[in-house]
Image (cartoon, rainbow over all chains, first blue to last red):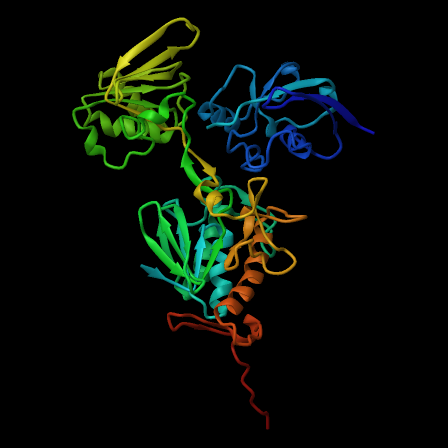
Length: 111
Length: 353
């Protein structure tokens, strides 16, 4: 009932429109994993603690609606690669109703 | 050659607890881990994070859980090979295995248990296209012997503690130290940041911030790095150097285990969860986060369960003719290999006249 639509562009460049539930305490990284849009073991390695950067995504819109970065998230993005101004760790983005229509792109895997 | 009953690859919580379960069956264990200390992810990634789903512990710090496990398995005298990665496996005619590490240490055991979690922790390599061709020819991800940098020019990249600490250390040894970092902020210990700032003012460390090393140049060996400055995308600086040391922390990789002929699915090792968590190669088991089966949950408590089940099967493999009856620790206590004995205090029966 309380799903929102999110467009996720995978690492191969393919766009997927998925319905993400807002009532299951999920974050964006978990949504990507549950739809298997990035291969297992290459995303969400630390489990969502902002302690690796494997779930880095580029936020293509709604940047102003997203929560502020925590110290831990800033810290990880600092050490990550392929970082851009719109980079976020998707595990730190809770799925909320106001994000209806969110568009994101998953950052490349670190070699 | 190190000989043991059960060779465990990975000294995280699951591997450590396997030592305890094996010890109850009087089986000796030896563990190999690429990290320098026990605990795996719990020590390397989140030692100060509280865990709330260890049965019997409403809240425990990951680091404390590791300390407790080490204490729990102490009577069973496990052996450790730290700082080495399990590289190759060879099956002998008698069905036993020889596992050789990255440093050539050989381990011989009838049973091999992979408790490797996400894999071994490897240095993160920056995405520079030609970096591989300069590895060991001027590019290093780990500083093993600082003396080789004496009177040489060194470029370090990174903004964390290890980049700061090594810049400070090498400032005294190298002829020139440059520290390249993507931002202006450094997130290391305040003390180290201040020291680097001081060294920079004294001209002993050259700070190059808001910049990234994007290319490497040199014939046969590294001769210079190309540094791109932020906001000046067109401007690139070519800096002559003898060494480039990118220090961007560690990330886990399944590594050579992926080539051992084990069935792999979704970056994890497939096991038989209806019985004993054995892989497609008899005698090799996989437990904890490294394995997969229908309904798998990557939880520490599931790893503990899998360790206990695996040990029963391993015992049967090592002693096919022996019958084993599981005993509760509340009944039999713990008989350590070091001669220690733990058991419940006996009630003294005394009649009252």
